[in-house]
Length: 382
Picture 1 (cartoon, helix red, strand yellow):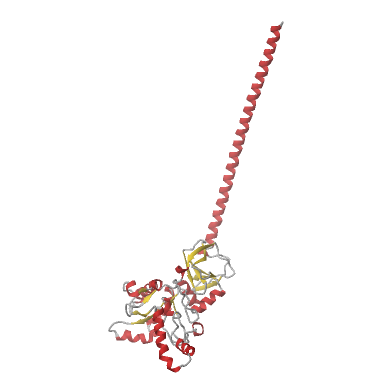
Picture 2 (cartoon, rainbow, N blue to C red):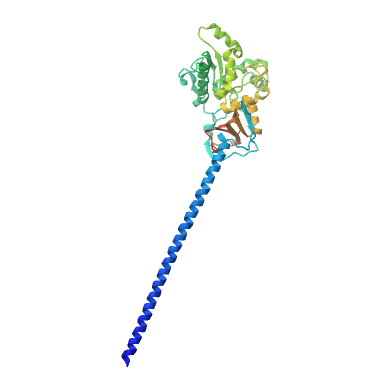
């Protein structure tokens, strides 16, 4: 009787085992199917997300292309419209600089690029490095003709003179320009000042009155435009040519002098001290701004962008700095095409300064320069 019971018990256990195994197998299969389904759904979601991202990227590139087409050369369509002919200056003071970045620059790199203001109210900075001055005749390999080997300038100014003198010869055949005077050291200016003071001392018993009288004739050392290394006095001269040499007496009535006066801004130069009807008839008197009331045939390097703004607006250097103080963000156009964007910002007098520049499309070159008033002028060229 016990054997059949054992058989039934065994059969039941076997059936239960088979059922449990089947259930386990079913669970494993179901789990695998669930995993596979999830993986498939994930792949589908990833593919859909990729497609959406690609579509968004395509739309972005289309909008970017449209923006660049509408803003050729960095011009923002929201800016005031510029003149279509000639040079024009557009005030952007109420418009922020696009794509601004902040860079750290050494003060020493910014002192010699052209905007250094030196006059009777603003002495040359004490950290000005006279060792950077070069003798123009040797430096230019003879392209710049000079009165003697001592005529010197900063390299930035000398390079611009080379460019202008080459253009004068190529365009007009003018070969008679010569630099008669350029840079004066602090010590040289001091000698001139002391000599003039000694000449006048018999007329004045008061030291202060004597110094003031001397300063009216010779600049206090460090306050002369000649102390910048950016200014030079040109003349006309050819050895043995009396006709050319005689023309120098009326430099700004000669074809050569008029060419230089008209074209100098194209090479970064401005006539430094305009007076009433000098250098040519119709010139407005700027002596009340420059502090110089004597006729000085002095051309000052300020860089082409600044020179073109000064020419377009009829400003001397002091007036231009005042203009930038009131309009610290401007755009400069030539025949309706953006050439320069200029900003002026306060940076102080530290050895390194924080300068704002723009990285927007179209910027080809960036240059910053100190104006000797705690501000830096930065130019983006397009």
